[in-house]
Length: 480
Image 1 (cartoon, helix red, strand yellow):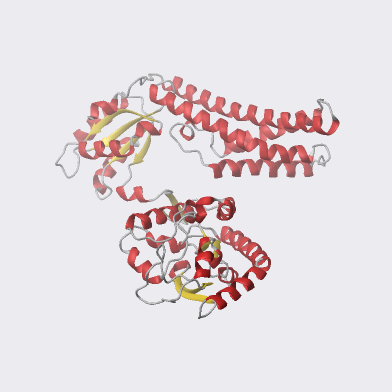
Image 2 (image 1 turned 45 degrees about the horizontal axis):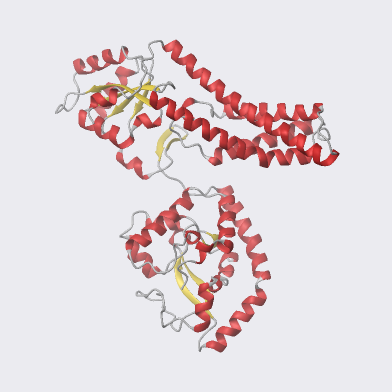
Protein backbone atom coordinates (compact mmCIF):
# COMPACT_ATOMS: atom_id res chain seq x y z
CA UNK A 1 0.00 0.00 0.00
CA UNK A 2 1.30 3.45 -0.94
CA UNK A 3 0.38 6.85 0.44
CA UNK A 4 -1.47 7.57 -2.81
CA UNK A 5 -3.70 4.56 -2.09
CA UNK A 6 -4.55 6.05 1.31
CA UNK A 7 -5.71 9.29 -0.22
CA UNK A 8 -8.19 7.78 -2.69
CA UNK A 9 -10.29 5.04 -1.03
CA UNK A 10 -12.62 3.13 -3.37
CA UNK A 11 -15.92 4.91 -3.96
CA UNK A 12 -14.95 8.05 -2.06
CA UNK A 13 -16.85 11.25 -2.77
CA UNK A 14 -15.28 14.67 -2.88
CA UNK A 15 -17.57 16.84 -0.75
CA UNK A 16 -16.83 20.28 -2.13
CA UNK A 17 -19.39 22.14 -0.06
CA UNK A 18 -18.69 22.22 3.66
CA UNK A 19 -22.23 23.48 4.21
CA UNK A 20 -23.70 20.56 2.27
CA UNK A 21 -21.44 18.20 4.16
CA UNK A 22 -22.66 19.55 7.51
CA UNK A 23 -26.27 19.29 6.41
CA UNK A 24 -25.77 15.67 5.37
CA UNK A 25 -24.32 14.94 8.80
CA UNK A 26 -27.25 16.70 10.46
CA UNK A 27 -29.63 14.63 8.32
CA UNK A 28 -27.99 11.39 9.47
CA UNK A 29 -28.13 12.46 13.11
CA UNK A 30 -31.82 13.32 12.71
CA UNK A 31 -32.51 10.01 10.98
CA UNK A 32 -30.85 7.94 13.72
CA UNK A 33 -32.70 9.87 16.43
CA UNK A 34 -35.99 9.42 14.57
CA UNK A 35 -35.29 5.69 14.19
CA UNK A 36 -34.79 5.37 17.97
CA UNK A 37 -37.99 7.34 18.60
CA UNK A 38 -40.04 5.10 16.30
CA UNK A 39 -38.65 1.90 17.82
CA UNK A 40 -39.25 2.97 21.43
CA UNK A 41 -42.70 4.43 20.78
CA UNK A 42 -43.76 1.47 18.66
CA UNK A 43 -42.49 -1.07 21.17
CA UNK A 44 -44.22 0.67 24.08
CA UNK A 45 -47.51 0.96 22.21
CA UNK A 46 -47.48 -2.68 21.02
CA UNK A 47 -46.68 -3.95 24.52
CA UNK A 48 -49.57 -1.91 25.94
CA UNK A 49 -51.95 -3.28 23.31
CA UNK A 50 -50.90 -6.87 24.02
CA UNK A 51 -51.30 -6.33 27.77
CA UNK A 52 -54.85 -5.02 27.35
CA UNK A 53 -55.62 -7.94 25.03
CA UNK A 54 -54.51 -10.40 27.73
CA UNK A 55 -56.28 -8.63 30.59
CA UNK A 56 -59.42 -7.24 28.92
CA UNK A 57 -59.76 -9.86 26.21
CA UNK A 58 -59.78 -7.37 23.35
CA UNK A 59 -57.61 -4.78 21.62
CA UNK A 60 -58.46 -1.21 22.41
CA UNK A 61 -56.72 2.12 22.33
CA UNK A 62 -56.68 4.72 24.99
CA UNK A 63 -54.97 8.03 25.50
CA UNK A 64 -52.74 6.79 28.38
CA UNK A 65 -51.19 4.17 26.08
CA UNK A 66 -50.32 6.73 23.46
CA UNK A 67 -49.09 9.17 26.11
CA UNK A 68 -46.78 6.53 27.60
CA UNK A 69 -45.33 5.67 24.18
CA UNK A 70 -44.75 9.33 23.26
CA UNK A 71 -43.24 10.18 26.65
CA UNK A 72 -40.86 7.19 26.74
CA UNK A 73 -39.67 7.72 23.18
CA UNK A 74 -39.12 11.45 23.67
CA UNK A 75 -37.26 10.98 26.97
CA UNK A 76 -34.96 8.30 25.54
CA UNK A 77 -34.10 10.33 22.43
CA UNK A 78 -33.53 13.48 24.51
CA UNK A 79 -31.18 11.71 26.95
CA UNK A 80 -29.34 10.02 24.07
CA UNK A 81 -28.93 13.33 22.27
CA UNK A 82 -27.58 15.02 25.41
CA UNK A 83 -25.09 12.13 25.71
CA UNK A 84 -24.00 12.68 22.09
CA UNK A 85 -25.20 9.26 20.95
CA UNK A 86 -26.37 10.44 17.53
CA UNK A 87 -23.00 11.66 16.31
CA UNK A 88 -22.12 9.92 13.04
CA UNK A 89 -18.81 8.79 14.56
CA UNK A 90 -20.76 6.70 17.09
CA UNK A 91 -22.24 4.65 14.27
CA UNK A 92 -19.54 4.54 11.58
CA UNK A 93 -16.79 2.10 12.47
CA UNK A 94 -17.58 2.28 16.19
CA UNK A 95 -18.38 -0.51 18.63
CA UNK A 96 -21.58 0.49 20.37
CA UNK A 97 -21.36 -0.54 24.00
CA UNK A 98 -24.19 -2.38 25.70
CA UNK A 99 -23.41 -0.55 28.96
CA UNK A 100 -24.03 2.94 27.55
CA UNK A 101 -27.35 1.96 25.97
CA UNK A 102 -28.46 0.15 29.14
CA UNK A 103 -27.59 3.18 31.27
CA UNK A 104 -29.57 5.53 29.03
CA UNK A 105 -32.49 3.10 28.92
CA UNK A 106 -32.56 2.79 32.71
CA UNK A 107 -32.23 6.57 33.09
CA UNK A 108 -35.25 6.99 30.80
CA UNK A 109 -37.45 4.91 33.08
CA UNK A 110 -36.13 6.57 36.23
CA UNK A 111 -36.96 9.95 34.67
CA UNK A 112 -40.39 8.64 33.70
CA UNK A 113 -41.10 7.58 37.29
CA UNK A 114 -39.90 10.93 38.63
CA UNK A 115 -42.13 12.75 36.11
CA UNK A 116 -45.15 10.60 37.00
CA UNK A 117 -44.59 11.19 40.71
CA UNK A 118 -44.13 14.96 40.30
CA UNK A 119 -47.29 15.27 38.19
CA UNK A 120 -49.30 12.84 40.38
CA UNK A 121 -50.01 10.65 37.35
CA UNK A 122 -48.63 7.34 38.62
CA UNK A 123 -52.09 5.77 38.38
CA UNK A 124 -52.48 6.71 34.72
CA UNK A 125 -49.81 4.35 33.36
CA UNK A 126 -50.05 0.58 33.69
CA UNK A 127 -47.18 -0.66 35.87
CA UNK A 128 -47.13 -4.02 34.12
CA UNK A 129 -46.96 -2.33 30.71
CA UNK A 130 -44.09 -0.10 31.86
CA UNK A 131 -42.07 -3.04 33.22
CA UNK A 132 -42.78 -5.13 30.11
CA UNK A 133 -41.69 -2.26 27.89
CA UNK A 134 -38.43 -1.97 29.82
CA UNK A 135 -37.49 -5.59 29.14
CA UNK A 136 -38.88 -5.77 25.60
CA UNK A 137 -37.66 -2.38 24.39
CA UNK A 138 -33.97 -2.70 25.27
CA UNK A 139 -33.24 -5.62 22.88
CA UNK A 140 -35.18 -3.83 20.15
CA UNK A 141 -33.11 -0.65 20.57
CA UNK A 142 -29.85 -2.60 20.62
CA UNK A 143 -30.81 -4.54 17.51
CA UNK A 144 -31.84 -1.46 15.53
CA UNK A 145 -28.79 0.56 16.58
CA UNK A 146 -26.50 -2.33 15.68
CA UNK A 147 -28.09 -2.65 12.26
CA UNK A 148 -27.88 1.10 11.66
CA UNK A 149 -24.20 1.06 12.64
CA UNK A 150 -23.39 -1.72 10.18
CA UNK A 151 -25.24 0.02 7.34
CA UNK A 152 -23.58 3.37 8.02
CA UNK A 153 -20.12 1.78 8.25
CA UNK A 154 -20.68 0.09 4.91
CA UNK A 155 -22.02 3.33 3.45
CA UNK A 156 -18.94 5.19 4.65
CA UNK A 157 -16.61 2.70 2.97
CA UNK A 158 -18.33 2.98 -0.41
CA UNK A 159 -18.74 6.77 -0.19
CA UNK A 160 -22.50 7.01 0.38
CA UNK A 161 -22.15 8.17 3.99
CA UNK A 162 -19.96 11.27 4.46
CA UNK A 163 -16.92 10.20 6.48
CA UNK A 164 -14.77 12.76 8.24
CA UNK A 165 -12.15 14.15 5.86
CA UNK A 166 -8.77 13.81 7.49
CA UNK A 167 -5.24 14.86 6.59
CA UNK A 168 -2.37 12.83 8.02
CA UNK A 169 0.71 14.96 8.71
CA UNK A 170 4.16 13.60 9.48
CA UNK A 171 7.14 11.84 7.97
CA UNK A 172 6.38 9.22 5.35
CA UNK A 173 7.41 6.21 7.45
CA UNK A 174 5.36 7.34 10.47
CA UNK A 175 2.26 8.14 8.39
CA UNK A 176 2.37 4.83 6.51
CA UNK A 177 2.89 2.87 9.73
CA UNK A 178 -0.03 4.68 11.39
CA UNK A 179 -2.36 4.03 8.45
CA UNK A 180 -1.53 0.34 8.22
CA UNK A 181 -1.79 -0.18 11.98
CA UNK A 182 -5.05 1.67 12.66
CA UNK A 183 -6.77 1.67 9.23
CA UNK A 184 -8.63 4.97 9.78
CA UNK A 185 -10.96 4.30 6.81
CA UNK A 186 -12.58 1.59 8.96
CA UNK A 187 -13.20 4.12 11.75
CA UNK A 188 -15.36 6.56 9.79
CA UNK A 189 -12.48 8.58 8.34
CA UNK A 190 -11.70 9.43 4.73
CA UNK A 191 -7.99 10.16 4.25
CA UNK A 192 -8.30 13.21 2.02
CA UNK A 193 -4.55 13.78 1.83
CA UNK A 194 -1.15 13.47 3.46
CA UNK A 195 1.17 16.28 4.44
CA UNK A 196 4.69 14.87 4.42
CA UNK A 197 7.54 16.50 6.31
CA UNK A 198 10.98 16.49 4.73
CA UNK A 199 12.84 13.40 6.04
CA UNK A 200 16.08 13.79 7.97
CA UNK A 201 15.35 17.25 9.40
CA UNK A 202 15.19 17.71 13.18
CA UNK A 203 12.44 20.33 12.83
CA UNK A 204 10.43 21.26 9.73
CA UNK A 205 11.19 24.50 7.97
CA UNK A 206 8.62 27.27 7.71
CA UNK A 207 8.43 26.59 4.00
CA UNK A 208 7.64 22.94 4.68
CA UNK A 209 4.79 23.87 7.01
CA UNK A 210 3.46 26.57 4.69
CA UNK A 211 3.33 24.04 1.85
CA UNK A 212 1.36 21.53 3.93
CA UNK A 213 -1.07 24.16 5.23
CA UNK A 214 -1.68 25.40 1.68
CA UNK A 215 -2.52 21.81 0.66
CA UNK A 216 -4.86 21.45 3.62
CA UNK A 217 -6.82 24.62 2.79
CA UNK A 218 -7.79 23.14 -0.58
CA UNK A 219 -9.14 19.90 0.84
CA UNK A 220 -12.23 20.96 2.81
CA UNK A 221 -10.94 19.09 5.86
CA UNK A 222 -12.65 18.19 9.11
CA UNK A 223 -9.58 16.96 10.97
CA UNK A 224 -5.81 17.08 10.88
CA UNK A 225 -3.95 14.18 12.50
CA UNK A 226 -0.36 14.99 13.49
CA UNK A 227 1.63 11.74 13.29
CA UNK A 228 4.86 12.77 14.98
CA UNK A 229 6.64 11.08 17.93
CA UNK A 230 5.69 12.91 21.12
CA UNK A 231 9.35 13.41 21.98
CA UNK A 232 9.63 15.92 19.10
CA UNK A 233 8.07 18.76 21.07
CA UNK A 234 9.38 21.51 18.78
CA UNK A 235 7.92 19.95 15.63
CA UNK A 236 4.56 19.36 17.30
CA UNK A 237 4.40 22.96 18.57
CA UNK A 238 5.09 24.37 15.10
CA UNK A 239 2.44 22.17 13.45
CA UNK A 240 -0.19 22.92 16.07
CA UNK A 241 0.42 26.65 15.80
CA UNK A 242 0.00 26.45 12.02
CA UNK A 243 -3.17 24.35 11.98
CA UNK A 244 -4.86 26.23 14.81
CA UNK A 245 -5.32 29.02 12.25
CA UNK A 246 -7.58 26.76 10.20
CA UNK A 247 -11.22 25.77 10.97
CA UNK A 248 -10.32 22.13 11.59
CA UNK A 249 -10.05 19.78 14.57
CA UNK A 250 -6.40 19.12 15.36
CA UNK A 251 -5.44 15.72 16.77
CA UNK A 252 -2.12 14.48 18.12
CA UNK A 253 -1.69 10.93 16.84
CA UNK A 254 -1.34 8.04 19.30
CA UNK A 255 1.90 6.60 20.57
CA UNK A 256 2.47 2.84 20.37
CA UNK A 257 1.90 2.44 24.12
CA UNK A 258 -1.77 3.38 23.60
CA UNK A 259 -2.34 -0.01 21.93
CA UNK A 260 -2.05 -1.67 25.34
CA UNK A 261 -5.02 0.19 26.83
CA UNK A 262 -8.71 -0.02 25.97
CA UNK A 263 -9.91 3.22 27.61
CA UNK A 264 -7.74 6.35 27.46
CA UNK A 265 -8.89 9.89 28.17
CA UNK A 266 -7.74 13.27 29.43
CA UNK A 267 -8.19 13.62 33.19
CA UNK A 268 -8.16 16.96 35.01
CA UNK A 269 -7.57 17.68 38.67
CA UNK A 270 -7.73 21.39 39.28
CA UNK A 271 -5.35 22.96 36.80
CA UNK A 272 -3.46 19.72 36.16
CA UNK A 273 -4.28 17.79 32.98
CA UNK A 274 -2.96 14.27 32.47
CA UNK A 275 -3.42 11.41 30.04
CA UNK A 276 -5.20 8.70 32.00
CA UNK A 277 -4.12 5.30 30.74
CA UNK A 278 -5.68 3.14 33.41
CA UNK A 279 -7.69 3.21 36.61
CA UNK A 280 -8.82 0.75 39.26
CA UNK A 281 -11.22 -1.64 37.52
CA UNK A 282 -14.06 -0.88 39.95
CA UNK A 283 -15.16 2.44 41.38
CA UNK A 284 -15.98 2.81 45.08
CA UNK A 285 -19.70 2.42 44.35
CA UNK A 286 -19.14 -0.67 42.20
CA UNK A 287 -16.99 -2.23 44.93
CA UNK A 288 -19.84 -1.71 47.42
CA UNK A 289 -22.40 -3.27 45.07
CA UNK A 290 -20.17 -6.27 44.35
CA UNK A 291 -19.44 -6.75 48.06
CA UNK A 292 -23.15 -6.61 48.88
CA UNK A 293 -23.81 -9.32 46.28
CA UNK A 294 -21.00 -11.44 47.75
CA UNK A 295 -22.35 -11.16 51.29
CA UNK A 296 -25.97 -11.80 50.32
CA UNK A 297 -25.41 -14.75 47.98
CA UNK A 298 -22.42 -16.10 49.95
CA UNK A 299 -24.39 -16.21 53.22
CA UNK A 300 -27.35 -17.85 51.51
CA UNK A 301 -25.14 -20.44 49.78
CA UNK A 302 -23.30 -21.27 53.01
CA UNK A 303 -26.63 -21.81 54.79
CA UNK A 304 -28.02 -23.83 51.89
CA UNK A 305 -24.98 -26.12 51.54
CA UNK A 306 -24.27 -26.69 55.24
CA UNK A 307 -25.60 -30.30 55.12
CA UNK A 308 -23.50 -30.95 52.00
CA UNK A 309 -20.40 -29.51 53.68
CA UNK A 310 -20.87 -31.80 56.69
CA UNK A 311 -21.40 -34.91 54.52
CA UNK A 312 -18.37 -34.12 52.34
CA UNK A 313 -16.22 -33.56 55.42
CA UNK A 314 -17.25 -36.93 56.82
CA UNK A 315 -16.54 -38.67 53.49
CA UNK A 316 -13.05 -37.16 53.30
CA UNK A 317 -12.27 -38.24 56.86
CA UNK A 318 -13.37 -41.81 56.18
CA UNK A 319 -11.64 -42.02 52.78
CA UNK A 320 -8.03 -41.11 53.63
CA UNK A 321 -5.89 -39.94 56.55
CA UNK A 322 -5.35 -36.21 56.97
CA UNK A 323 -7.35 -33.05 57.61
CA UNK A 324 -10.71 -32.35 56.02
CA UNK A 325 -9.71 -28.89 54.83
CA UNK A 326 -6.74 -27.91 52.67
CA UNK A 327 -5.13 -24.51 53.18
CA UNK A 328 -2.65 -22.84 50.87
CA UNK A 329 -1.22 -19.34 50.51
CA UNK A 330 -2.54 -17.39 47.53
CA UNK A 331 -2.23 -13.78 46.38
CA UNK A 332 -5.42 -11.74 46.57
CA UNK A 333 -6.37 -8.14 45.89
CA UNK A 334 -3.32 -5.92 45.35
CA UNK A 335 -1.11 -9.05 45.76
CA UNK A 336 -1.88 -9.39 49.46
CA UNK A 337 -1.34 -12.98 50.63
CA UNK A 338 -4.15 -14.95 52.28
CA UNK A 339 -4.91 -18.60 53.03
CA UNK A 340 -7.43 -20.16 50.69
CA UNK A 341 -9.67 -22.89 52.17
CA UNK A 342 -10.73 -25.92 50.11
CA UNK A 343 -11.76 -29.48 50.77
CA UNK A 344 -8.68 -31.73 50.77
CA UNK A 345 -8.70 -33.81 47.57
CA UNK A 346 -5.09 -35.05 47.48
CA UNK A 347 -2.75 -37.01 49.71
CA UNK A 348 -0.28 -34.08 49.74
CA UNK A 349 -0.64 -30.51 50.97
CA UNK A 350 2.14 -28.63 49.16
CA UNK A 351 2.58 -24.96 49.97
CA UNK A 352 6.19 -24.16 49.19
CA UNK A 353 8.32 -22.67 46.44
CA UNK A 354 7.74 -25.67 44.18
CA UNK A 355 4.20 -26.98 43.69
CA UNK A 356 3.31 -29.63 41.13
CA UNK A 357 -0.08 -29.06 39.53
CA UNK A 358 -2.69 -31.80 39.46
CA UNK A 359 -2.75 -33.73 36.19
CA UNK A 360 -5.21 -36.11 34.60
CA UNK A 361 -5.15 -39.50 36.39
CA UNK A 362 -2.90 -38.01 39.08
CA UNK A 363 -2.17 -40.72 41.66
CA UNK A 364 -2.10 -38.14 44.46
CA UNK A 365 -5.84 -37.47 44.12
CA UNK A 366 -8.02 -39.46 46.54
CA UNK A 367 -11.14 -41.38 45.54
CA UNK A 368 -13.47 -38.83 47.17
CA UNK A 369 -11.24 -36.00 45.91
CA UNK A 370 -11.69 -37.12 42.30
CA UNK A 371 -15.48 -36.84 42.64
CA UNK A 372 -15.27 -33.48 44.41
CA UNK A 373 -12.97 -31.99 41.76
CA UNK A 374 -15.09 -33.32 38.92
CA UNK A 375 -18.16 -31.44 40.18
CA UNK A 376 -16.36 -28.40 41.67
CA UNK A 377 -17.51 -29.30 45.18
CA UNK A 378 -13.99 -28.91 46.60
CA UNK A 379 -14.37 -25.12 46.13
CA UNK A 380 -17.38 -24.75 48.50
CA UNK A 381 -15.36 -23.90 51.67
CA UNK A 382 -14.10 -20.79 49.86
CA UNK A 383 -17.45 -19.25 50.79
CA UNK A 384 -15.68 -18.59 54.12
CA UNK A 385 -12.98 -16.63 52.25
CA UNK A 386 -15.73 -14.67 50.51
CA UNK A 387 -17.49 -13.73 53.74
CA UNK A 388 -14.11 -12.79 55.27
CA UNK A 389 -13.57 -10.33 52.40
CA UNK A 390 -10.50 -12.13 51.01
CA UNK A 391 -12.27 -13.37 47.89
CA UNK A 392 -15.34 -12.68 45.78
CA UNK A 393 -17.85 -15.10 44.34
CA UNK A 394 -16.67 -14.13 40.87
CA UNK A 395 -13.20 -13.05 39.81
CA UNK A 396 -9.91 -14.40 38.43
CA UNK A 397 -9.13 -17.75 40.07
CA UNK A 398 -6.16 -17.40 42.48
CA UNK A 399 -3.10 -19.53 41.73
CA UNK A 400 -0.48 -20.88 44.09
CA UNK A 401 2.14 -18.22 44.83
CA UNK A 402 4.82 -20.39 43.22
CA UNK A 403 2.83 -20.43 39.97
CA UNK A 404 2.22 -16.68 40.15
CA UNK A 405 5.97 -16.11 40.26
CA UNK A 406 6.46 -18.54 37.41
CA UNK A 407 4.08 -16.80 35.00
CA UNK A 408 4.45 -13.17 36.10
CA UNK A 409 7.72 -12.72 34.19
CA UNK A 410 6.52 -14.62 31.12
CA UNK A 411 3.03 -13.21 30.43
CA UNK A 412 2.40 -9.51 29.87
CA UNK A 413 0.03 -7.89 32.38
CA UNK A 414 -0.34 -11.16 34.30
CA UNK A 415 -0.25 -9.25 37.60
CA UNK A 416 -3.32 -7.21 36.58
CA UNK A 417 -5.36 -10.23 37.68
CA UNK A 418 -4.74 -9.02 41.24
CA UNK A 419 -6.38 -5.64 40.63
CA UNK A 420 -9.68 -7.21 41.75
CA UNK A 421 -10.43 -9.82 44.39
CA UNK A 422 -9.94 -13.41 43.25
CA UNK A 423 -13.09 -15.47 42.80
CA UNK A 424 -14.46 -18.93 43.44
CA UNK A 425 -15.38 -18.98 39.74
CA UNK A 426 -14.57 -16.69 36.84
CA UNK A 427 -14.91 -15.85 33.15
CA UNK A 428 -12.03 -18.17 32.23
CA UNK A 429 -13.50 -21.12 34.13
CA UNK A 430 -16.93 -20.95 32.47
CA UNK A 431 -15.11 -21.06 29.11
CA UNK A 432 -13.39 -24.32 30.04
CA UNK A 433 -10.02 -22.71 30.82
CA UNK A 434 -9.22 -24.51 34.03
CA UNK A 435 -7.11 -27.41 35.20
CA UNK A 436 -3.45 -27.92 34.40
CA UNK A 437 -1.55 -25.10 32.66
CA UNK A 438 1.33 -27.16 31.30
CA UNK A 439 1.97 -24.73 28.42
CA UNK A 440 2.36 -20.98 28.33
CA UNK A 441 -0.40 -20.76 25.69
CA UNK A 442 -2.95 -22.24 28.12
CA UNK A 443 -2.06 -19.73 30.81
CA UNK A 444 -2.07 -16.90 28.25
CA UNK A 445 -5.63 -17.81 27.23
CA UNK A 446 -6.73 -17.90 30.88
CA UNK A 447 -5.13 -14.53 31.59
CA UNK A 448 -6.76 -12.95 28.52
CA UNK A 449 -10.19 -14.06 29.76
CA UNK A 450 -9.43 -12.77 33.26
CA UNK A 451 -8.40 -9.36 31.88
CA UNK A 452 -11.56 -9.24 29.75
CA UNK A 453 -13.59 -9.75 32.92
CA UNK A 454 -11.68 -7.00 34.74
CA UNK A 455 -12.15 -4.52 31.88
CA UNK A 456 -15.84 -5.32 31.31
CA UNK A 457 -17.13 -5.93 34.83
CA UNK A 458 -20.79 -5.48 35.66
CA UNK A 459 -23.21 -7.02 38.13
CA UNK A 460 -25.01 -8.65 35.20
CA UNK A 461 -21.73 -10.25 34.09
CA UNK A 462 -21.20 -11.64 37.60
CA UNK A 463 -24.71 -13.10 37.63
CA UNK A 464 -24.17 -14.61 34.16
CA UNK A 465 -20.92 -16.26 35.30
CA UNK A 466 -22.57 -17.68 38.44
CA UNK A 467 -25.40 -19.10 36.32
CA UNK A 468 -23.00 -20.63 33.79
CA UNK A 469 -20.84 -22.07 36.59
CA UNK A 470 -23.75 -24.24 37.62
CA UNK A 471 -25.50 -24.97 34.33
CA UNK A 472 -22.86 -24.68 31.58
CA UNK A 473 -21.10 -27.84 30.43
CA UNK A 474 -17.88 -25.92 29.76
CA UNK A 475 -17.60 -25.00 33.43
CA UNK A 476 -16.88 -28.67 34.16
CA UNK A 477 -14.34 -29.18 31.35
CA UNK A 478 -10.78 -30.11 32.37
CA UNK A 479 -11.92 -30.79 35.94
CA UNK A 480 -9.56 -33.46 37.30
